[in-house]
Amino acid sequence: MRRMLLLALAFLTGCAANNPAPRIDSFQGRYRFLSNFYPAQVEFQGLTYPDVEHAYQSAKTLNMAERRRIAALPTPAEAKREGESFPPRSDWLKIKYHVMLECVQYKFFHHPELAAQLLATGDAYLEEGNTWNDRIWGVYQGKGTNWLGKILMTVRQELRRNAAAAGIQSPGN
Image 1 (cartoon, rainbow, N blue to C red):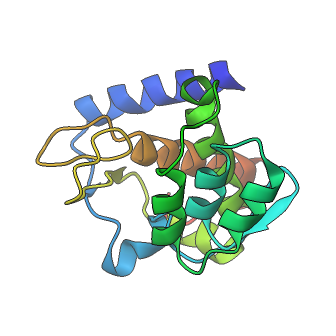
Image 2: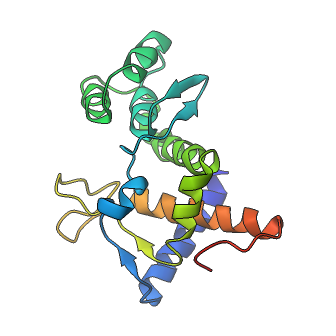
């Protein structure tokens, strides 16, 4: 799975550099559904969370009581703050990208209306442009690795493959 993700991300990075496809550069307004803060229940390792952000932040700890506490926080912003307030588990740097992929996959594979919206973005390059200086998951002032955007484009490709295998024409194609 990890190898597949790396290959897909390498492919998408190359496509973005060689193809002047449309660009979605902010996950606000009509593209708010792309944000990890968007309310869409996500199950992760036996717990249900109100959104991707809650699930991702809780995965920073192996303590299940702490995960349940983070899951119960009222907003994704509070979950993010809480997840940044303690040292993460020892393997966090190795697994955090896979955790994000798993949570984003769940969001779009289990919410058909969101899957349809993601597919409707067509071949647009998805960039999590932000004003909070996140240069890992997004892009700030033109700089950043945009991992969230790359994961979303990977999930969009997976949805297309699934639709094609089922004989369904996906929107945006």
